[in-house]
Image (cartoon, rainbow, N blue to C red):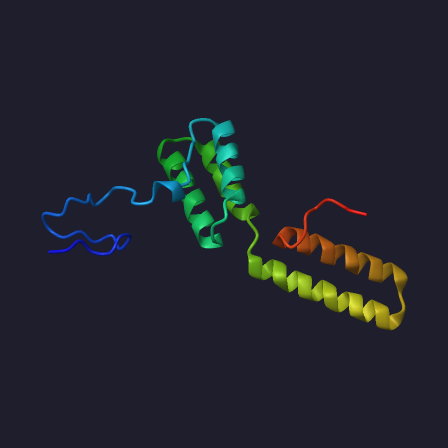
Length: 138
């Protein structure tokens, strides 16, 4: 009997593959929660990892639950705050679209101050979405 496709979580009887091994260790994000400093480093790393929102939340939830079980409430709270700090992309895109509409209405009304504020909000959302770097270039 041939082995099932890698990553399905299934294993035939007598297979050489192990059920609970990591089939792609390069893709793994390690979680450290021994100290609050370790937890902060892990949260910062998870925020930078190019994974989906759901996967980031899942990683931080694992850290939070493990810390809770071990009685490390301070570390668990760091993971919980980290989960709350990861913005949903959908929410950011909505904010960007609203800021762009505000720029248009400010241009129609010829209001320079509100136009400037709206353009700054557009830039902020572009940086958060990764469309631009936060550095100003001229």
